[in-house]
Image (cartoon, rainbow, N blue to C red; front, side):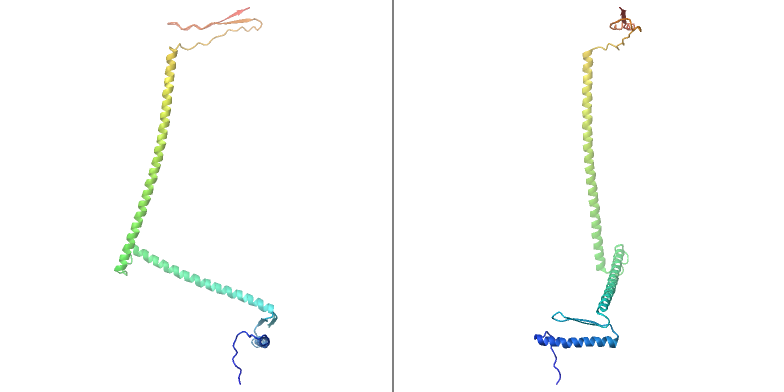
Length: 239
């Protein structure tokens, strides 16, 4: 009578579970040892029981097996990343080449070239696209012209304001000049006729410091008709 098929699930009975663990653990350790010997393979096995007990086996040492595992895993990861990155960039390059081809074809069609393969519907769509593009170009041009006109109007207003301010300053200066002219005319009218230039006084002083000097100042005489003005004299009397 053969053994029945065992359902792979957790054994509820703790005693049966412990017996099964011991049997299968020993069998697994035996298989790992045989694999290492028969196939010259580097084998490492680590087992933790449900109670936290450690069981391990290694054909060389557990540390060397773990270190080799980490190194190999990193190299494999780098290779996979490099392959994935290479595939990604190849896909991106192919997509960009296709986009460039489509753009070049659309540009030639917009320029009126290579239209032989297009049908009536395609030509009509191309015509509508050109009309929309032309409408957009005209709107942009009109907007630029409107902006330039508004800017020129703004600058013209600023220049007009500056001119008005300068005109006010000129008017103010003109009024000040008129007032000054009126004041000068009024002053001339009140003083009467100009009496001519005033002749400077002259002094005669003796060099003798011991002699007492008495100075008398004589008023200048007005200029007579047909002659020159008399020079005022300063009389000195010694005492």
